[in-house]
Each structure stands twice: as C-alpha cells, then as structure tokens.
Length: 166
Picture 1 (cartoon, rainbow, N blue to C red):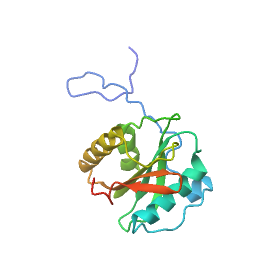
Picture 2: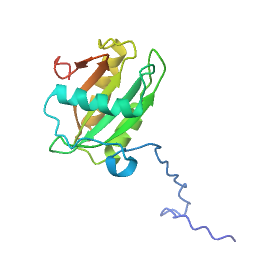
Picture 3: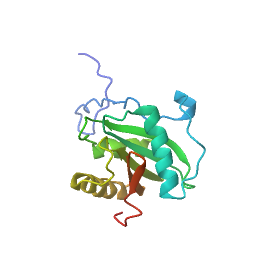
Picture 4: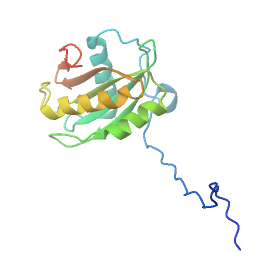
C-alpha cells in the first residue's frame, strides 16, 4: 500500500490537496520595483489624485483604461498598490474578489480605488458606481475602509468621497 503524506480527517478520508495561487504584479513598492512612491500621508482628494496620476504614469498609458487599488496604513500613508485590471479603450473589468484578496494580503487598514478614463471625461459610469458599491460592501466584512474612488481624466479628477457617494 502506498503511503499518502496528505493529512487525513477524523473519519480516515484523505483531505483534498490545496493549491496556492500567487498574484502576479501584486504589491508594488519602492523597495521591490524601484518605482518611486512619495512618502505621503493622504489628507485630501487632491493629494490622492496626484498620487494616482503618479502611479498611472509609471504603470499605465493614456489609451487604455486601468484600475488600481492603493493600500494605506492607519496613518493614511501609502504602503503599496495593486494593478487590478488593464482593459481596452472604452473600459476594463476589475474583479472584486482579487481586489479584496490583494488588500487582505497587504494587511492594509484602508484603500483608495482609482482608475483612468482614456476619453478624458471624469464622469463616473453606472458600472463605476455599481463596482464601487460592491467593493465597498465586500471590504466591510474585513474591516477595511474604502476612503475614496478617484477617476482621472486629462487634467481633472472625480472623487466619489467629495461627491458624497461613498
């Protein structure tokens, strides 16, 4: 009889094998990638938008839509970020499960969601509003606060927090 090294349940049945999945391009920070992240404490949506643009200039481009999650500690200091989605010219699909997983693994206290609109318009779509609500609800089960969702376009930005949507 072959020896099986997998753990067994009390009833003698073998436990199923658990596979580990690693997120590629997970948390990017200055010490791991060389991307300069200002040692900034986020106090206003304007500061947040500036940091979002900084990250997008390093990671994205102006003709595709990207969705990011910025991780913050209790002092609202950025500790890293995650490129959640890279889409096309007119949209991108961000998976709330992967976003929550990334934030939980980052041990953050709060997050800022942000994405760009290649059209230059900062007006949120209905899909933007629904995704924000869905992600906010998912984070509530982990005691992680969504501080803002910022949409960057051209030289302007839209802040869900400033508009009272969060």
